[in-house]
Amino acid sequence: MTSKFTTPPRDILEKLIETSLKAGASAADCSLGVSEGVSVDVREGKLEDVERSESQGVSLRVLFGQKQAHVSGSDLSDTALTTMAERCVAMAKAVPEDAYAGLAPTELLEQNPPELDLEGDGEIPLEKLEADAIEAEAAALAIEGVKTVAGCGNGWSRSERWVAASNGFSGYLSGGSTGLGLAAVAERDGAMERDYDSWSVRKMADRPSPAEIGRTAGERAVARLSPRKVKTQKAAVIYDKRVSSSLIGAFLSAISGPSVARGVSFLKDRLGEQVFAPGINLVDDPFLKKALGCRNHDGEGLPVARKFLIENGMLTRWLLNTSSAKQLGLEPNGFASGGFGNPPGVGTSNTHIEAGEKSPATLMKEAGKGLLVTDMFGPSINPNTGDYSVGVAGFWFENGEVQYPVSEVTIAGDLPAMFARLIPASDLEFKGRRNAPSLLIEDMSIAGN
Image (spheres, rainbow, N blue to C red):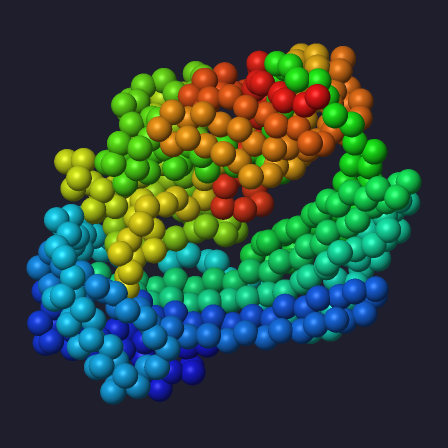
């Protein structure tokens, strides 16, 4: 894709920063990104839709003292870039001051961002995308009880991104991925249930076969037929590994530097304390092989590394960018996200709860009875208290064995107490940017009949 530029991308960014400074900016950062990809949809064994996308964009953020503004566009001509810089500076001069705005300190920057191999399969032939999607759809339809496949898509994409800032930082990252997924609909006695399977990976070799993906979606949909309700009670809940990573998201929101600085986090006073049970580790790893969230610097150009967010149950750090670090009187620690043309947020790369020693079946047997959650709808979380509730579907188990599917159930608790008694199973699988094994939490409130 780089060959599409008549001017090297680094030169484009350097000129954009130079023009901004000449127009009166005290500092600036920017990014240039390009991407391309193809996606296909099939229905009833035939190709239904093909979409090819190609895009390029440039983003610029300028600072005028403690004032900042940001703009973006797709025109990379000299005239357009000059106009962009001048307008952005004019905007910055007109907005209110932000006491915490600014670029990362030069002495903290990553000096030599490591090269990462994040390449995918490259351009996958349209015929291969179509054939794999048709194979997955057929495998789902072959499962007894499956009525139809609501949607089956397959595709690939790749991207490149260059970043630069007036504090001297510059970086580059490229990568590719492919994804195949479908939703199957099963029917019994006029009632229908839906379930799915999907995979997004760097390379096709890292995912199950199309037939296995389709078969899994079909079997999951059939297993959900004829669901029952359960009585309101307190019982064990096991979050299947398909949905358990949602608890990581709730935890990351609570340790976000901006949330802590605003005082809207139920963990705001817990740094350095026991938050999970001893032995529980939660890791962020920007260099995890083949993972989708890899990066070689954070959103402000600071170094990144494999770090424990929870170590032996203890909360080790906040997620900080420069702005939130200033508010808290701390130093930024490599968890800025976005940035370079936009005010940076905070975020992680590849985050996972380390696997436990017991299988999900063993945890289910030890719990005796409870709810195995495989699907979730509309979680509600109070960020100040951690009060938590979510609609779920899944399976009721007794005597350590699944008995029947359930739906229209709500589970509730408070996240600090849930984290403290959470037990991870041994079935950790890396599929996305956040991963967790199945998780057992005893004594949850279950609202049914």
